Amino acid sequence: PSSSNPAGDLTSEILLALSKEDPISSTEAFPDVPFESLKAALDRLASRSMVAYEQAEREEAFLEPEAEVIVSHGSHEARVFEAVRQALDGLSIQDLESQIGDKMVAKLGQGKAFKEKWIKKDGAKLVALVDSINDVTRDQLKVIQEKRTHDPKIIADLKKRKLLKMQKVISFRISKGPKFALEMVREETDLTAEMLASGSWKTATFKPYNFKALGADQHAGALHPLNKVRQEIRQIFFEMGFTEMPTNQFVESGFWNFDTLYVPQQHPARDLQDTFYVSDPPTAGRPGPVSAEDKLDYDAYFTNVRQAHEGGKYGSIGYRYRWSEDESLRLVLRTHTTAISAAMLHKLAGQRVDGRVPPARYFSIDRVFRNETVDATHLCEFHQVEGVIADYGLTLGGLMEFMSIFFGRMGVTDLRFKPAYNPYTEPSMEIFSYHKGLNKVIEIGNSGIFRPEMLEAMGLPKDMVVFGFGLGLERPTMIKYGITNIRELLGHQVDLGFIQKNPAVRLDKN
Ligand code: PHE
Image (cartoon, rainbow, N blue to C red):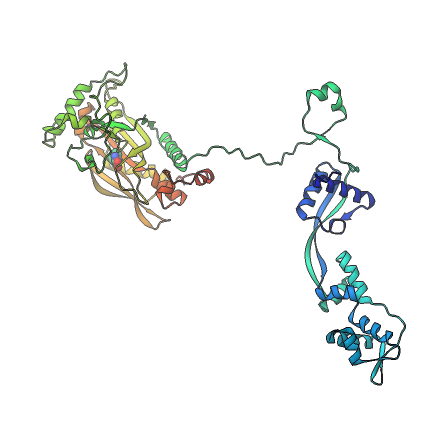
């Protein structure tokens, strides 16, 4: 055996020991080998059926320091006897104490030696009664020192005399296996071309497959929690008959982000404090067809929007201000995904099925940007979940019913609705829900029925009603994962370990 391979050494030592005695106990045969190394070697041998082993836990006896002294110097009584025997004409107690050098040992030893009738008192002196004695205690302790066990009665007695302490020891009972041999055969892990050519495969021993082995850590990519929650919500939309809107553009013109939504140009949301404007290039061209198939009349739409804002149209008196085309064409990082909804509804207005604009359900879940002060619950970029439903004969009660069903599928129940204001919806409702975990009512969304100033400018028929609603993606995700600081979820401070280890998410659907 080579010393550079201690594990190999140990396996052959085990095999050698087993060839002499079968079974063996690891604590007797290999008292000094650490548990882990022994188990590794045994596993190697057991996987080849060369040995079998079982693990046993047993109590073993260990000598207390006083017992160690007895093993090396003899028991107290034996020491007393020996001193007395050697003094041919007796020994005074004082001389005994000084010879032994320990008052306590001399005293305890005398008592026991008297009881054993090894010595007696003869006047002021102690004299021996026998020629030789058996130091039983020492012999017993010697056996225990080697074997760590003895007759239970003896163990109990020595324990009572505080010479032993008991300790739990894990040991292996090792026996020969069906393929026992003195040497470990080399096990092939692959059948190679060489083995086939030389014929050595006929005699080779192949390592059996270990189907219980864990695979190597693949360091695979991990889905961000936002992505997982997004996927869940997407599924709900699909189940409810929605089509996903193409939201893959972060930059919009003010026209799509605000004007089409009937947001006046002086509205505070259009302020630099709330919106990120793009400086290079600063403006977009006028809205126009996006492809050759796009036959929509963008010029008419552009004019309709201007007129709806300025002087009023579609039964509305408008905002009565001078609408600026330059302002409309400024480029912004979209502040909501409703910019996309507007473009989709405009496109819907250009479609006819049997001469009628068909009902539609659209949704999107994507990133938006707002010029906000970052804190534990606000970031400059976050994700919006948005849905629109265009149909005939829709009512506000229908919107409330729909929201209850939709949120119910996300496990959110007991909705409360509160009147609110959006420039593009009337009426508008903020949606709240009582959250059991947080023990408070929290805002979970915003909704409304789009205004005719917005819809009719697109060319949608007067009797078509369009619901719209939006909610954040971060909030439900944070609640689901128990995160209190949004910066732990998104942005440069995110701990990649958290992303990697976070569990799969399932919304508690109703
Ligand atoms: N755009 C709104 C927001 O950012 C959400 C909304 C969408 C409201 C559609 C009503 C209709 O909060």
